[in-house]
Length: 416
Image 1 (cartoon, rainbow, N blue to C red):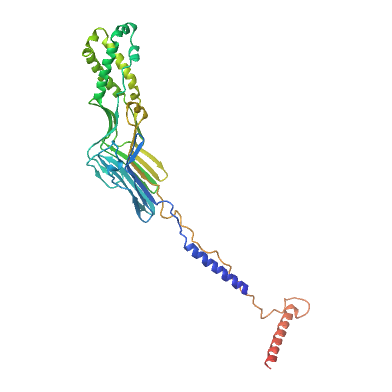
Image 2: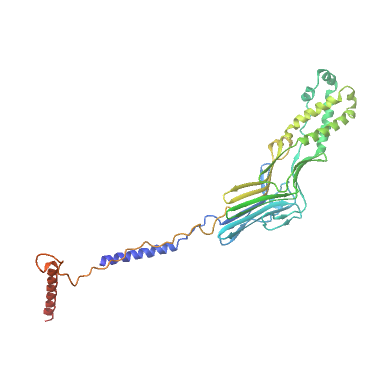
């Protein structure tokens, strides 16, 4: 009995110790925020050198929201770049808990001077001000030349013989006109923006986002004229791609040169007009320049509007993604990558797990069994038994009686 009581006491102590340990252990370890969102107004890479407005990030741990970065950065954070010198940057984000689940929203973008910053409003954090003009790259055409070999390739032998005595002064005169036109051209790729912004929302079981581009477009300015390359839609569909070539720019350059070459031949090169066919000379000169301009007719600007990337309980949205492609490098355009209005929401989680955890209860302990009782009476025997009339039951009764009598006699003897 002593052994049995000692084992029960040890089991009870172990159970109490395990309950203390379980009480000191947290039920759920939060490895990730319950809700999170971030916003970056502007990212630039100019000739391989990156710059950005910084990122405003908010997280929620189920009890309160924390933030890092600035939600209204100054343009000075972009450093000494020449792409944007004026305007308003906005990058807003917020988080909260709805019915035990994380929810987040973000908005970011760029607008001109006079724009008004708004709070995150699921679609807008900027009210447009003045339009903003950004130079995406200066188009340097100074490397174009009138090539002698290409210039003569289109003429028959008779015209080549006629041009031989005056070919050197003719090419020198045409080259001088070409350089004059190119110096005055001052060609530049330009982005015109009103307010460009993106937004995103991540709620339990739902993510959404979009972009708006007010008064946005791309053009090229050349010799006082402007060629429209792109008119950007105000509310583009997700992942809208716009690829632009400069075929119109090539036509404008050649048209300007034709006028200047004609005036030069009739003016400065007037005396040569008597021995040459002006029409063929103009065609040959424009042909050699046009061959060198051919890469401009390939893709120069690659534009993505309302760029979206989605994952499980998360979404990233970029309002405007502009890339000046390597083909423009041969014309002195400084390669440029621009991301305007990058907003990110999620992934979000829950404050509590999906299902309640089972309570930590100790294993059931075996109950102590009652001690056997000594019988105080024994039946005389089963009915119908044979043999002695006492039977087994009778013998037990006699034995117990004898033992009791002996015990009484012993006690009496001791007392006496």
